[in-house]
Length: 416
Image 1 (cartoon, one colour):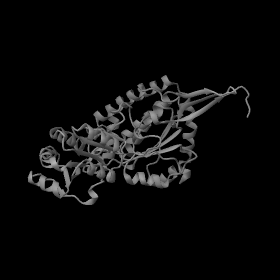
Image 2 (image 1 turned 90 degrees about the horizontal axis):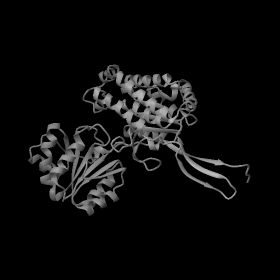
Image 3 (image 1 turned 135 degrees about the horizontal axis):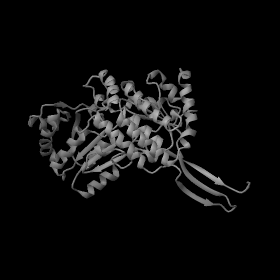
Image 4 (image 1 turned 90 degrees about the vertical axis):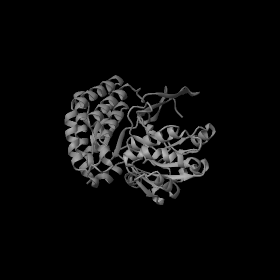
């Protein structure tokens, strides 16, 4: 099976020289042109996307991730323009000094090389990753899921056509086979791929982590909590929690578990119930929270099982647990967090600072929705994903992190 993708991998290594020769202004022009091409082919993209959507049950939580409509395609074009205007992260001089014997020693940023990204059910990732890799001078190998294969192939084809239009090697961007039987060949292609970035479910990330010989940067699943502390403004807290859960439940920064201080549990949950009800959010509540919500007449209620904590729902579902105080909330988050995004609603500045300092997560919030954890929102342009690990990149993994370092030494015949 390795022979089947051998040519694709060889092509990727060879394409590095082509993208390396493109100037900063050339990269900008390329992305602007790609934005125009994506926009001009909106109808065709929707038609290809419909082929994928027709194979999926609309009730599947992944359906929303898979969907590309006019608004989302316009967002992809806008994102390409935003990435084009970001500063090139390569070629930056990090340090320079001259040694006693006259050697000039410099450290500069350079592209990672060949970046492989494995992802599921989100065809927007095809464009996001390609734009970031192009802007930073990297070659990208895209391995999307079978769910989105028609959309991904069409989008990759548009990108490759623009590369050819600019006289560049079209293999700077390649869509690898979606067939699962090839995934191990990709993960073990350490001679061809410089880094693998998985973006998707826990199962996908675990598969990559356990089998990859290529270095891996994880973009982890999101198990996100919001703790409503005793001094919180309850109207604001209910509004923020509702936004974090229902605005787009299929994404990794959506809320999964609500922790609420016992002293305000009844008034808070009474305010929250009518805001969740129109969305039919299924709530898995501990015994105390269940009793409160039941008394409000909330219809979509289940008793929580231990497995409902630490669970990424990716749907109109969440769990609720009542805690005694901030310490108990911190203990719960420490036990169940995926280290993605965590929030506290409080008017106590000291407790807020304690929460922000002690919670071990890529993004921590005070009085705001976890839904803001996003490279574009943070001003980074598009993102490859949200990294929950601590090496190389943490949080939105975007343009600025698609580089490594190179030492450059200039001499005049010195020997050692």
